[in-house]
Length: 253
Ligand SMILES: Nc1ncnc2c1ncn2[C@@H]1O[C@H](COP(=O)(O)OP(=O)(O)OP(=O)(O)O)[C@@H](O)[C@H]1O
Ligand SMILES: [Mg+2]
Image (cartoon, rainbow, N blue to C red; front, side):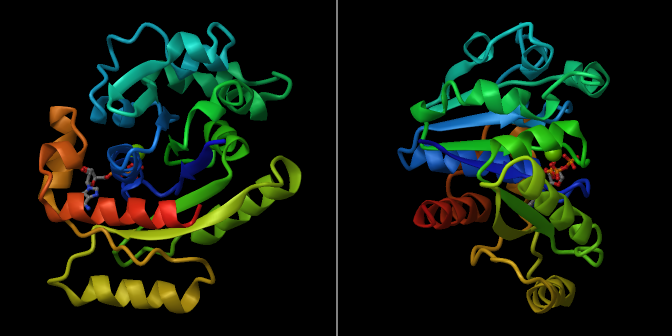
């Protein structure tokens, strides 16, 4: 049975999608069978893995409104060992479509359940909000991995996020755990990054991944080529660090 990890933090621009893309790709590179699910209407995980989000006929939105089943929207073997459930801007209408729908918290879970035994890992990229889309990701997932950007406001919003995860666990998905936090965009040239890491370690009673993702321009460039970092620049510090993160995630199995 695939282990399902949602990458979530309602704070914008902290490295969720970069982590979702590159963790998925590095797990696949290590021979794991991976499904990447894009739950963000921005569709950046979809395009970052090389799927043209404006060309796909059916997307996660069609799942949400019941116009397609999971097999209908699956993009298979986008990379070796990696399938994608794609998304584009259509998904931004989902929140409204879901008003008054019964069991709306479980739409994605019910679909993913049909195929989860085909995968070792299922990685879900969440939007920067605590919306019904994020709730759908959290009811589907076994755990939540929280990227934290190494900047001054790193801890802001984290208590709401943890509270949300606890509420979902209590009321909707008793399996849900906090996988841990991963620091992103670490800049070794500044004291600030180091201070943020130490401050979070002192104040946050959660599992923290040993791997710290450095700030690496190659990570920012790769999506415009539709490639994960391990293919775009296989020897970059970004690629090396996401491989190490993948090793840690595998070890936790
Ligand atoms: N380690 C890194 N080094 C350099 N740039 C990075 C790194 N991680 C992310 N970025 C860049 O920072 C920006 C935000 O990253 P990303 O899109 O992954 O964040 P996000 O949390 O998914 O954002 P959103 O909340 O909008 O979904 C992007 O331009 C990305 O390319
Ligand atoms: Mg994102």
